Length: 508
Ligand code: KIV
Ligand code: ZN
Image 1 (cartoon, rainbow, N blue to C red):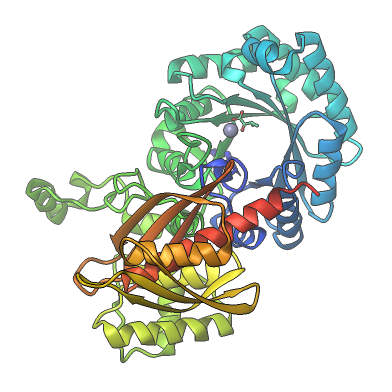
Image 2: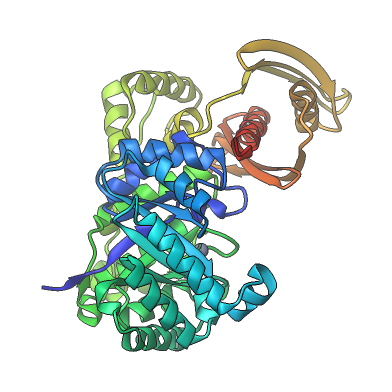
């Protein structure tokens, strides 16, 4: 029987470190439930000592998600370990991931510690964590740029102290595949007790090599891979789950390995991640990009029709991409809508379905056909995003060649309805100025873009904004057939997210 690769998903921890991708506890829970459905082995739910928001999310997930192991990140301090334990104590399968940097660069410039001090901190932390946790992972931050003998020493000490998994991160995405696999091979050969632990790798994509490095490491003996959905993460991102899993699946003969991933949940997981975080998947992204299965060239189309094997190495159905796009219209009822939602991979409560149905009917009155993307945009806006502090109640805009653009906005602020009006150089500027004045925000709008969700003159407009206040950067999204309303919704969604990250970052 083929050996199984452990899939450690860190979308909710490292993935959330993508600029603007912050998620609140409810959003993280939604995603964790999908990750469980997807069949990941470990969910790294957060870094509890980093913020109150992370603590709450890890706690909520460990109470509600019982299939996969739930991991939390910690530095080597007792405070971090205590905080991780408090957040994880209700999990039936808790894991702590203790990390410290091991490269000379980090030791000299960041930690200002000697190698012996790093060894001692590692052993002390693992022994202390052993009081609470039976499942301990140790991560050597910046491992790929560390001295390889030191890596073997520290992994040996970590395993003796109680670590069941030792993780080698390519923290800055610097490694080359041949080099990285040699390093994994070296560690496997020169760490005497490595047989008592699982060898793991964690790659970043700064040179576009995260998947290549991860697969090369598997070939050299790594048996856990740390990945994120859509490859989101710090800077250029982390190794993408779908690329590694489909690599192993598609090239069975090459790897002779398996994973516990239900591949038909890959596409729903990708969509949900994108809808919740607001991070759009690039169209040519491997596996989950919108172009990944579309064949444009005539020669390719001809080949596919004659025999799919000519140009198709994977089937869209394998990753859960349904080829039948059932189109809904104004005569479609609740039943058809419910079926469509289930097909798209969402589970909504009865009251959510009812409210979605109302919005669907409003849209169907304006549009002949409602496509999957329209439905998903509404789901994202209504149910997948941050609970509202600010909520748009009413918007009226006057604009034109002879008028001063003026917006009148009615907005609920923490449940209290307020109204105001303001001007701008155009209708969107007038709307944003008015909302900003009402919310008394200090944030700056650093990005604004409009896209059409489905194409066509009557398509819904999808607006994305990026707001910045101090060190906080958030994304906001809104969809509506009227792009000024969509803009107002996106701006308000951004303000809600900003409030959330500001509140949850207060480490109280
Ligand atoms: O990239 C990295 O080194 C990490 C560690 C904290 C595991 O994310
Ligand atoms: Zn990382």
